[in-house]
Length: 310
Image (tube, rainbow, N blue to C red; front, top):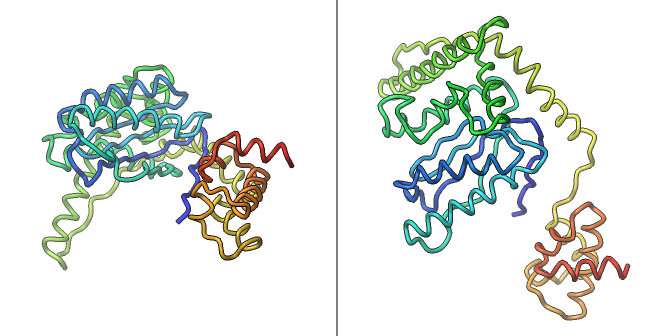
């Protein structure tokens, strides 16, 4: 199954998650070093860190994307974390069970719930007795707008203002509203547990706090980035996946060939002809030579040679 391309949405906040292989508690005991790597990765990138939680078997990160792709932040970070786990745990093989997952926060409600969700991880996992009692999450940093760099401090302040009840709320009031929102999420957890324990009971869920000022702040600060991406997607032509390009070329030139044959590094005349056709079509579709070379298991020089010959 072909991989989907990572979204490129500068200015939008993403909820990123990465889980350990087999859900092993590989980060237990090395949370402090992992948190330091999360903060250091932010300082090395143009992204803005909004919130994080380092759990024993997974990571949560809320990141406002800069101009660079998300991978410029996540790949070096996860590589360093993987090396740390291998050294500390003498672990062999894959550290993470799959590619990290990303989800764009496209509405103010989504962003508010994502922040609360990240910070509630320790409490929900019974690793702390209160929201701010879990040491390896950013709850205290978030409330105090304490960030290692000015860019992230601005991003945290903007995210905190999404909890404003009215346009006139100052930052301290937004902080109080955020805490009330988190308590509402905890009350919602308790309501869901009661409803599951006593099905059919007449339980009324607690009413969510009213945060009209936060909605207005979202429209001014975050919505333009989401709207710009929506417009770009509407107008931009859809690019075929590399696997689909290869399948089309093989169907037209050699229906007997399989994708595994094309990517095994063989050098028969038929394979070379089909591979050259795939390279030309992929490059014409906008893929970089390095991406095409990685997909076909050939060197970038081979891709460059094909492009020069044609």
